[in-house]
Image (cartoon, rainbow, N blue to C red; front, side, top):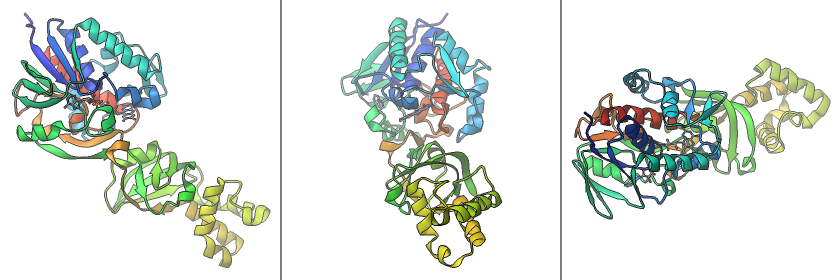
Length: 387
Ligand SMILES: Cc1cc2nc3c(=O)[nH]c(=O)nc-3n(C[C@H](O)[C@H](O)[C@H](O)COP(=O)(O)OP(=O)(O)OC[C@H]3O[C@@H](n4cnc5c(N)ncnc54)[C@H](O)[C@@H]3O)c2cc1C
């Protein structure tokens, strides 16, 4: 017979809310209290997917994560009970655009409102505007009082976008309890590049980008967006997960044409358009950027040499990222509670009364629903144990 265990969950955003709902679904007698330091549930979820909330990636790709083996072991411990099945059980309707899964409403605000009603219906005790300051065993100490539980679930996220709640303030608390914390840094964020001229700010261009160190660390075809002091776009945010000091960013502005084809295009344009040869293929700020880069070549080369020169330049433009944008502008945090401190059910090896779900763990994924997907997967696994 299941007992009405008392469970305190720290964090009322994606992973905490999913854990509460799935645990209650499996065992309605559980007494669950959900804490959040902000005055709303799912404050970060509201900002996801450009306000549409990209819930999942379908198919689920373990290789999209920094620890694919660990994620794979979690998938196995759900006994192949799919993530979409989990959403269905919570009466969450979804739709899929390409490989991206969204709530059927296609609206993050509606989705969060719906999650609130589900929590209310399930009888979860929600304590908003209450910051957890300390955890002692299964006791949670907040800025408003002390609570005693049988289990504590940590679902407090990372350090990204602290204005949306996750300020990382519990990592030092966990460290003091004996947990290992993999150092945190911003992920899924723009890259600072001092060699991007301000004149390119706001320009977007289809491109293949490669982040290269001693070897190629990451490459993707996508759209690069120039900022006043760096580069952004989904492909760049994905590349930021692999950034190391000293890496170069190589941009191919015409990934669909090989260098020979592009050279022929440019040669035709040089014959017909003269000095305006880049006008048919580039926006003005980019055209001016490349003309400046090729200033010297322009004086000395013949038309065919010039075409070859620019073709190479357009396919191998190198920028030198100097660093990552800060947590305030990152979508996820890399690092967090070490996976060595949890088992395949997300129960702590340091204190068996503790569970960990979502981004506070050292797991992050690429853009495309993988991070909310991990919030759901981890909640599914932990709730199975809690119930
Ligand atoms: C702009 C933006 C867009 C994104 N878009 C997508 C997307 O479309 N798809 C996708 O998969 N992922 C997306 N992500 C990433 C995704 O939102 C996160 O990975 C996910 O929200 C992590 O869920 P979580 O519950 O683990 O942590 P969080 O969502 O960060 O929630 C942690 C919660 O814990 C609370 N908390 C923290 N400390 C305390 C404390 N001491 N006491 C009480 N409460 C506390 C916080 O207030 C917060 O509500 C996006 C992120 C951002 C910032």
